[in-house]
Image (tube, one colour):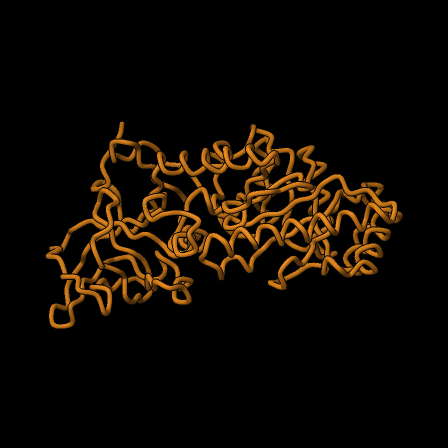
Length: 380
């Protein structure tokens, strides 16, 4: 039976089912029009219920960021999986075990010769060829082989292909897109990401190496991509939930954010203009990603129990278990009268970090009632 949010303990993690489904449908339609496959990232969701809504089918495809995620989803029937963090030799036995135990096609990534040689050695000694993608650095943001470093790219490819592993392709992640907020700049970032990974694939193929998969992805570039010629799949994940960082980038609107934290007013510091809640940084996270954006949302935007933002009201500071709600500094807003016991919803800066402390989503239906409890997990 459906219940209201008033019946939930606080803090609780809420997920608006209608917004989630619309976000997924919008991305699916956009990528289908561009003629590319879609591999949803499940690192934010960490939930089978969400995964089944995002994937093309119960068997995938999907990408994960931990081997715990890989094992969890493989045990529940997801077969086409990619572990999207550079592999270490110590993790290869676990990768092999997940593949063997669940019959999952779990692929891994490398971006240097030491990794490639370790994977090739393991594949040969275990008589278990591992599928591998080479990570490409498309924007200098983090890891990967530079797309113009043909010598390194080919050396890694040959070490894998000739050494007993399966060279499945190349992938990249345009993490630098998170620093952008103009549609033209984001579209250009998507073009650059595409060009880098398609160019890297061409280098491998010219060297006589296989490269069936050409994979790119971040929520901002996926949203603003206009031409993905040469790309076979796009990966993204946080788009399903949205958050204030994505809203600041322009990848979603405030009204698209599906995730929020339910909290209760527990007191006031009226002389300071503060309202105190029971959701501090343990409930909201310490992520302050909007502090570098044009609009600083501090620790989160404050909404009424129905999810409608209260004008110019934000969580200006947070202690471990206490949130400090106040009028946005510099605004003309007026502090509302919110008595002790008032329920509020906080839109988060970073959905991934905010979800981390919680073991479930309380799912909000179209009528604003809680219609389900979807389990989620964390850890490595």
